Image 1 (spheres, rainbow, N blue to C red):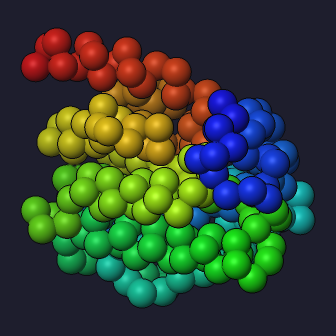
Image 2 (spheres, one colour):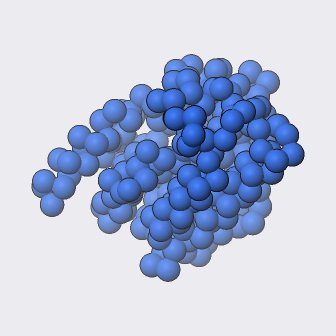
Length: 246
């Protein structure tokens, strides 16, 4: 929905008023995508390989379409990589990092959101605001955030800052994708879509995609459907059913 003119800065990217792309080539052309990967100790082994392999086909699209849209960073390790293209570069990136430590979801998300809003503020004042693409932050995680690093308050602060600075509401999207079937993680992640800023956040739990993939794993095909929004319409209904069963 196009926002009222008095609620946003003039000169924003007109793509923000359009529906999300339904084809990967259009998505990568018009959006920036940042994968934030949980590299906590519990992601070792199969889950680490699952996350790596799921990213590979998306990176292949970037290579095929000559897109610079894919960036990767991690929860704990400070290694970051921009403009990732192709399976080879994805594997190289994951080989630099070994899962260890906790799950500081809120801390890393705060850093990412602050950097992006700063970028928008600078673009509005210095030029380039019209061409600034929307950013999708896709968080791949297998567990409950560390008790001192919840994501919900961070998202609330960022949403307020975006509104106060009059940035278009579609300029940042956050998608949490659960890796594995930890039953404790699902309600925590699902609760984010029922919060006050759920227009910014989508969550894909293991239960939502497990039936879509062999062995209940997050495959490249399912991840692509998640990114393009193919599974999103069921989220609110699933949340309501989940709450009723609790």
